[in-house]
Image (tube, rainbow, N blue to C red; front, side):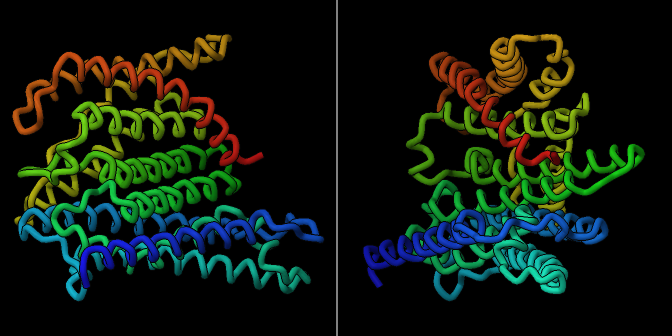
Length: 380
């Protein structure tokens, strides 16, 4: 099979999976219904705890598998395709998707049973009464459907396949959707005041894992030893700190809006670093390749928490202030580190300027969107 045929088939598989997801999402969530959505079909609190716990395990498998996969690419000099596609790291990654899909199916089956007993037989009503469960199931279905297309992209590009390839970015997006949906489920679970700290801690862990997933796809290629694919080296070097910083900022603002806890951004950042550090040490102990530690955005998270934002009544000033605080706290440590690295293209003053300017502007633009997303995830 020549490269043109592989490319077309890869596009067809990926496009078909996306098309299927869009059609099913429209039917489940947006298609007209004569009946109203019942309010009483909800998962029990214990079931929510099980769902969130298994999704946490699934996401841990995903992060470990992805970093292990990157290590094996470097060690073997290969990106497997065809019959070799399902090597151990890929099995771990797709096993994580299967685990998420199975727990979503179990949960929806439990809700369907209650719905049918109550005379509610339309599956759309079950899902619309529990939108986050439906989102987990749909995202997990997409990840499993994308396996053939991902295999073809690997076979087509080989070692030059970038993490920014369409199937990888879609898989990362679906993995993030699963974790965000788990946060939504957790926030809908009634808790007593004494249980709220534990729930907040679970939110930080979920978001910290989400940042790990997105960070791997977003910037890991700049943090691996050895050479990079030509497509990666062709990107402007300021794309590295810009993408890494924005992914962190999005996650931290979500944490602050969803928990209202003073140190939420810092706690989420610490979870991210602890997960990454633990896996990196594990890779070293097992003889695998260790990536460099991620860019230092902990001080940016700390500034988001330390500065009292509520007294700033003007929302535009508050938005700009939060974006500026994170940008300063991030840039003051990340940019000197990048300037002194010899394994990447020279980080010029112009690169530093673009990084700071774009991080500030895009962060300010994202805050209202993140505020809206947080309202959707929060109960009531």
